[in-house]
Each structure stands twice: as structure tokens, then as C-alpha cells.
Length: 261
Ligand code: F6R
Image (cartoon, rainbow, N blue to C red; front, side):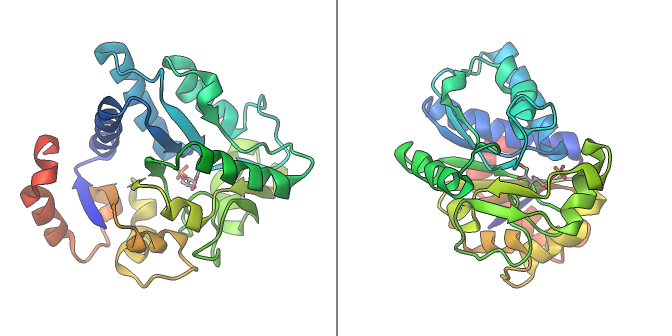
């Protein structure tokens, strides 16, 4: 795992967008794993800008999203399908047939989860997976105690997640109780993972995920097992990390990051 600390949210999001753009330029048929949530909005805004100003080409790119709420139709404005459409897909030249999210309306939800895993496999696996982190440490909707080898499945949302996302539904009680999510095991198979966390509300959980023990109580801690995972944080989210000076030293000295400093 590598940790990169940027001065603020804009700089952290811009770095994530630049890494995605560089990977996409190197491989126009990139398979991107996508996340939703407030943290990702600025990353998508910057990718849209790169598309408009620097002709970043999404025409051959394929995408798989981490998760979708059970019970919401893809056209529901609160669905992750719509989130992706509004924040990225409709603003770039991506072929919508190449974009994939689990269907929260499937009659057979377990069958839908298996179908989604097979679609990822048939697509050649995920090259670059974007991740946010929930206040209780989830990646995707892998709530505390998610098995570290779990695959795409239906998960009950934890009280912390209901609280975190309730406002978007006009209250926790109006929110879906379950979601389909890629598993921790599915995420760990991505070739490269990029986790973005910003703001002081993420400082505690980032410290646990990066410097704490690997535990299913904090799903993001499983990323310590990943051979190529970069955690990008702003100063506020880095506040509780003990090894800050060491992480800064690596970023300054590692040749891989030369073009990004
Ligand atoms: C959403 C997802 C979640 C979010 C996390 C952080 O697709 O996978 O894990 O990334 O809940 O959400 P925000 O960015 O809203 O704090």
C-alpha cells in the first residue's frame, strides 16, 4: 500500500483523475471499476474537464460499478445508475453499452450477483478500481464483518451507512435497507486499486484501514493485502496517520510518482 497526502480535496481528487486519465491513455480499452458517493463527484468533474479540454477518450473504455441499492430502478434519481449517468456517462463519449451496474430490481438477486461476477470475468477483470471509504470502513457496501474473500452479493446496510446516506433519501427510514455490492474478494482481484478519502470525518477510519490490523470489521483494511493499492488523502483525512512523514518521503522519492509531484 502507498499513501499519498495532498494539501486539500481538490488536489487529492485531481491526482486521482490524472492517474485514471494516464491509465486510459495508455490503454484505451481499460476496464474501470467505479465508485459513487460525494467524494467521487469531484473526480468525475475533473475527468469530464479532461475529456472536454484534452480530448480524453472514453469511447472504448468499459466500466463496472461497485454497487447499487436493492429496489431502485435504474432511472430513479437516487440510484447509483443515475448518479453515474449524471456525473460522468452523459458528459463524456462513453458507449453506454460498455457501462455496467448491478440491477437492484432483479427478481432473482442471487442470480444477478452471479451474473455480475461473470460479466466482470468475461470483461477480462478490472484494471483500475476506484474506491471511497465509508465511516465504518466499508469499500463498496462491504459492511463490517464482510468476509475478506466475499464475492458480489446482497448486503444489509449498517446503521452507520444508513446514517451516512440517509439525507439523500429524505431520511434514514426512507432508504433502501439492502444493496448489491462487489465483495471484498472481488475488489482485491482488480489489477490496481485507488482509494480516495477527504475531510476530517474520514481521519479515524483511514488510520484504522491503513495502519490498523487487517480485520473484517474494517473492510478497507483488506487493501493492505493488495499488491498495488494507492490511498490518496487530503491533509484533513490524513490527520490521524502516524506514518505521515514516511508516506511523504516515499511520494517525494519513488520514481513512479515523478510526473505527479
Ligand atoms: C459507493 C461506495 C461507497 C462510498 C463510501 C463513501 O459506490 O462504494 O463505499 O465510496 O460510502 O461515500 P462518500 O464519498 O459519500 O463519503
